[in-house]
Image: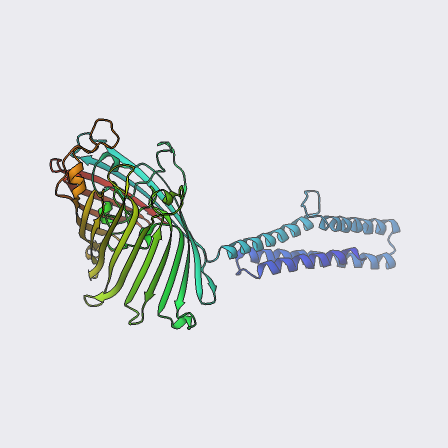
Length: 510
């Protein structure tokens, strides 16, 4: 009879499919069990064929009643017909023979394993990161204290696999952000923001709601130089970035003071204060710190692999064009020169100098823009195995600047000295000098014409800021950071008493 043979052939095909699906996977207990099940099914088919052949032989030789043999043969034929019918259907029914149901289950398991393998292969090369930051702060020394204010911020980043086209490597970067709470910054008039981690989607969003925004989306191409050279031997590189970016991701970087989620919270210790401050941020980005732009960067390691020299140019949208509401004009332009050196017995340090210009920079008069220019210096240097010192300086010119000089100096010390290598202690001091324009107008300026001076004090001298924090790692990926800040003469107001800011930050990183 041919029906068992047809069944055996289909079983062999199904087994081959299962084996083919498993070849891309390492041996696991589930696969071993699957192979054993297929072996048992094959043995059962062989037994059925053998039994059928014996019945045929006995039909010819046995004196048993013909009707009995016919009945047994008919039963076998019916069973084989059921198996054949079930194998021709994709679905699994509770009415079909157990043998076909188990064989189909094994086949579907193999197909599912193949599908998962294709999904994992498609994601290979992607990298992603996520972090959650929450800060609580309380003001002391202000006339009307808002109590303790808490905010949170979550960031998710995704980087595509690097694609090589000839010698050129390229990739895409995406950054999503969500958050609520503006913190204590808006309760205080100062040149510095005491909580650089605060984030909330503008005034058009209700305070009790939050929304995810695409913070950054940019393309990067790394081009080894010379163009016709051998990539592996190249010691020079040209990098091109364009898209929606955070300008501080490429300029004014600093190993000791650059990340408000793990280091200092005050804005004067995160970026150059002339470029990033609550009253008039000259960086020209939108209200959340991002803007469309282009960056070109040249990096050379020709002298030594441990030393490098770089020159970069950035052109970013400013004013209303930063949030895509106008065409790009009078952009924020910055040029930075930098070098990495090994000093103090081979310890790494980075030194940067930059000049910038913004054709439509904001001023301390709400809604007014002016042309501002300036320069900055920036360094971070390890002076011992676990001690990094850093500093920034900046000067600017133009009408409507709230302050025109800024300087900061500090250090970050690793907890390795007291057997807590993942911990860190940071301490820093910073100053901002009130500009001549601000000193002349702060007492009488009434830009909104409501009859009440916007600032109401005669500014003079320098605003002074100090901050100290201790980052304590509870376990990998979870840090808690008590933080204390002191601001003397906030916004260069000589009669305002010092403001103390007590706070704590919780940071989750994945």
